[in-house]
Amino acid sequence: MRGLIERGRAAAVTVAVPCRSDEPGLLRTLESLGAAVEVLEARGHEVAFFVCVNGPQGPAHDSARAFAVGRGRGRTTVFELEKADKAAAWNRLRGACTTEWIIFCDADVEPARGSLGCLAESLESRPDAVVATARLEPDLDGASLVARAAALPHRFDFGVVRGPLYLLRTDALARMPDGLLLEDAWLSAELGARGAGSVLSVWSAVVRYRPAHTLGEYFRERLRTEAGKIQIRTDRTRRGVAHTPIARYPWEHFLAELGPREWPLVALNLGVRVVARLVAEFAVWRGHEVGWSPVQSSKSASGVK
Image (cartoon, rainbow, N blue to C red; front, side, top):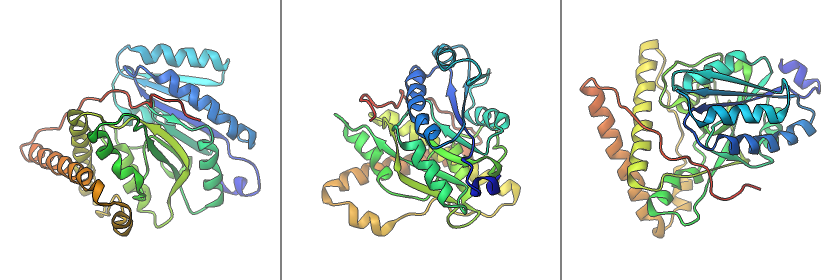
């Protein structure tokens, strides 16, 4: 596949959207993607749309079907899974994909119009990379202190796969374990272990999202994250895989970027993380699984240019 791309033919691309059935704003995300793929098509990429709605009947089913009708016959495929499991939806989309590249986008964010083109251009120029991942841009209009603290880490490059939007070489990975709480961290560990440069951060590719605005939302979000890290650690131990760091921490950039006015945000961010980690570790020690519930849609209230 890569040889064909290197000889000048633009890679065929599948845009894949896993979506919980209760997500109310799927259509807005799909419409944003519909505008963004025009840039890919102008560069010569053939583009197909896959949407996998997972969970009981909800508004996302109708949104996915309406989008498929609007794009025309045969241009969008809608899959449905009864179980609300993002990893299982990811596997269904990846398993059906026959193109060289696949773009995964969360159902509750909005990619900027040029973001997909930036991801494609970056991956083409870096044959050593297997995944190109977009930068997260929080909507902080009228944001609470909690939202600004929650958004703080996304100003920095941790060298990870940022789950809301990334472009993957399809032959890099066939499947992930069902039931993952933190599929992007699992991808970061699996793909990052292939060596330096395998995960490509593309900061010119932007996806807008809504950070958690209340302490309860943020704690649930972090509890899921910490439980997901424990889950990944357990999975790698079971498989006998070395425990490589999921992320790299740009300490010098932290010190240069964060001034005294932001120290309260840092303290709040770290405090929530520590408590969530202790709760997650205690639950696992007691033999309990850590449950979680999704927070309100993270879509930006404002439009994306």
